[in-house]
Structures are given as C-alpha cells and as structure tokens.
Length: 404
Image (tube, rainbow, N blue to C red; front, side, top):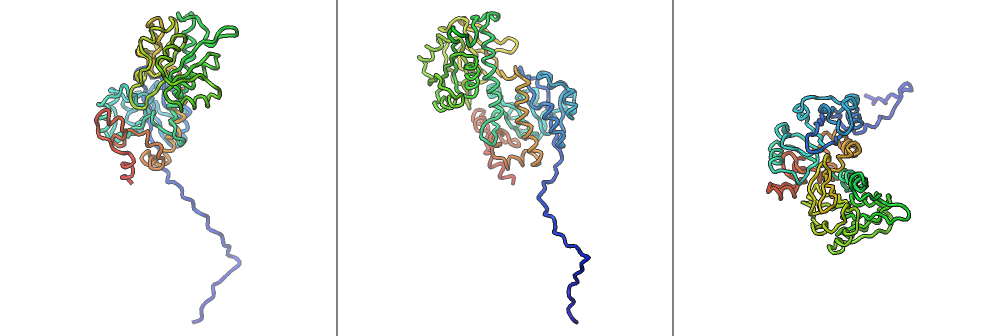
C-alpha cells in the first residue's frame, strides 16, 4: 500500500496559537467590617468612603457600623453611596472575617470576636492587657498592628503619617496656648522684625521632632533640637536642609536651655516600652511662667516628669506656672486628615490581599508585612509582647513556611 502524501489545500488557513498567560484565579471578594470606635478619644476611621468605593468596585464587600465615620466628618450617606452596607447592630459588624479598626481591641470587643478572624488595628502598648492577648490567641486570630506595619522601603507608613500630623499640629497648638486669650504669655510664636524670635526646644529628632522643627522654623522661631542619636540629628539636618542647633541630651545643658525657652516639645519615642523621662520636675520648676510644654510621647509614658494624661476636652493643666499639654493620640484631633492617611496605606494592602486570596497568602510573598503581624492564627509572633506578658513566642517565618 503506497504511503499517502499529506493533502495541502489552499482553502485551509493556518494560524498561530495565541499564547495563554497565567491568569490568577478570580477569588471570591473579601468581607470587611468597620465598627464604630468606642475607645477613649478615638475620632479616626480606618477607611474613607473613597477607599471603600475602590474596594467595592474590586468585588469586595464592606460593612460599616452606623455613624462610624461621624467623628471624622464622613457620613453614612457617603459610605452607602460608595457601596458599603450600613449596619445598626455592632455584633453584626464583628462577624466580618476581616475587621479594620482605628483604635486597639478593648475588653468590650472580646466577646464579639470570631474564630480565625483577621484584625487590622493599632496596639497601644501602654494599655494592652494580657487577657486581651490570650482571648485573641484562643480564638486563633491573625492580628496586624498599624505601628509595626512596614512598606517596601522598610519604613513604617502609618506611624510616619501620624507622626507628621502630630509634629505639624504641635506648633499650631503651642501658638494657641502662648496667646493671651488662653492665659499664655501673650507671645506670638515666631515673632516679627525687630523682636527676638520665640525659642522652641524639641527633645527627640524622630519624625515628630522633624515636623515640629519644620513648622517652628517656618513660623520664624529659633529652634534647638536634643536627641541622643547623632545619626538621627544628622538626618534631621539633611531633611530640613539647613544648619540647626542640635545637641545630645546632656542634663545640665538641657536644663539651661529649658530655663529660657517659651515652648518645649517632648518627642522621644521608644520601640519597646515607655519613653525615657529626661526632664525632671526640678527642670520644669525653673522654666519661665507662661511657657508651654507639649508632651507628644505621653502615649508611651511621656518624657517630662510633670506630665499627666489629659483629654481633648480638657487638654491642659498648670504646674509651676507652666502650661502642660499632654493629650495622647494628637492625630485624632485632626481626624479627617489622619483617616485619609491611614486609608491610603490600608486600601492598597486590602486590595493586594484580595488578589492573593487572603492575608495568609499575601505574607508568603510580601516578607516586609511580617513585622506587622503580632498574632498569626492564634500564635504570638511579637517577641517584645511575649517577653512582657510571659507568653509563648513563635517565629512567624517558621509558621508561614510550615503552612506551605
């Protein structure tokens, strides 16, 4: 039998096959709950209506408790127009698999938490209790903290924004309390031609210190910055772009400068526990009557010995004739700006988690996010918290690798 030749006809048309690209499987949208904050002085909300609208148009579902955005002037109407579902029952919001909060978890929230929930919120170390942690561990919760959340450039975006707000706000607040209307010295912060500039002392050259220095210089004040880290002082000078008076914290020198200043700002931060107390009661008693102390680090204990926590309603008290402003969570007083800043970080993060099919998958690819997780499916992964509360510590990298 003769072999048949393949038949080639001009009526056939030959086409190249299209290349098929690897398309990620479309995952079901995530359910995100935003409760109304009932914690002390919390006016911020973690997602703005604009951010909600982006999440909803990407196939996610957002539930928000009635009036949750009121304190930062975002109305229920704005959220429902953005596609969120407004819920009147607090317990209902807590049923969402992903909770986004702008205040830490408090005792009242514990009974409402669900098993295996993902919670994104700040942790205020000064008020955190062991019971809260252990309940969250029993419920196998994965918890991500604002403070330790890192981005690709290895910086802390939410802390940075909040510190920028606090630093800039501090000078506006100081100006307010130096005026005669508030029984201050009646001094204009900054000063004018022919009159010596107001003297501002800033203790701490972190982001708060840098923004406070920037605002004070812009107003025309004379600024002196103290910090024990020479590299931070160098960075502050480079970022501000001009030579400044800087010094390491040397008690005698600090006391001498405090004696003659109008405004003293405490902006030291501590990664682990309370902030170091570098200004003693004696130093404060030698300050000029009518001068203003603003202790921004009061959230972590404060760096003036005379500081005591105050509230947005009653922000100041007098001691030795010196006005003390010690309101924790200053950004909450500028809630709308602060909410937008938090939202700008969390919205892309949630979108990315949705694309990867949940946070568990996201932290496999995005290694920098691991520093923000302090509980992973009920295991405590923050070394500092485990030491402080004497709870078992587990390395998050091992946990994530063992799940693969």
